[in-house]
Image (cartoon, rainbow, N blue to C red):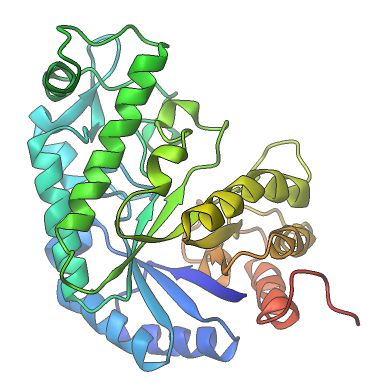
Length: 339
């Protein structure tokens, strides 16, 4: 079993080198770097240098479409959603939403451009992070059923032969939205098929984000080109035992990955853990390790201390727990080693 960690918020190569040294010395094997639309416009060469520095240290380097089109996980705004209203999702009340629709032509074009650019930077892996329909951007609004835009209506007519989208809450509409996300991913993967880059898909935990459109994991497990399947069972403020929650949400993912012949990855929460509760990381990692995935990863480096809205209460203590977890489990079977 290997360990990974995400890294974001720094583009200064002097600091990146120091941080990557710390990650490598701690025993991590993989780093997931965010690559947002802002980066796509302003920081392509900077991200390329970060990828190179990561690989120079023998670490797997993955790039994450962080908030791209508003369809992937991340606290980054989508330029396309801000500038092309025709590409935006439309909710059941007919209101425009600040995220893009996977069926819009402009969205597909953006995803293809992102994938080609990311692969061209030398990344080992493209990390397709939490694809989803609108879930309430930046948690400022409640999720609203989406999407019913012109592109969705046209795609529905083309694929089903029926004139109107089904009513909200129907199985047919849920399946259509799932298929829409799967097609978008297929296009992104196909755009870089000859590049040699590998693809990892992280799916939101089932049953907690039903409106996102990815609860039917069977629709994604057979996507051609996917080398690794993962999920991120972050317990956040839910009244649950972290270890039990990780085990419950992670087990079906590992089983599906094994059945599909894919690697399995479990992400562990390294955000918003209150000071004094860092032991939750230990129990979550132990639960994940017992499932024997290929990779256990943390979001994110140094307990996300660079982003105050996501930082753990005591980042130093939380980061220490993460590094100790690597010491306990890296390369070992899933059970807690003897002390």
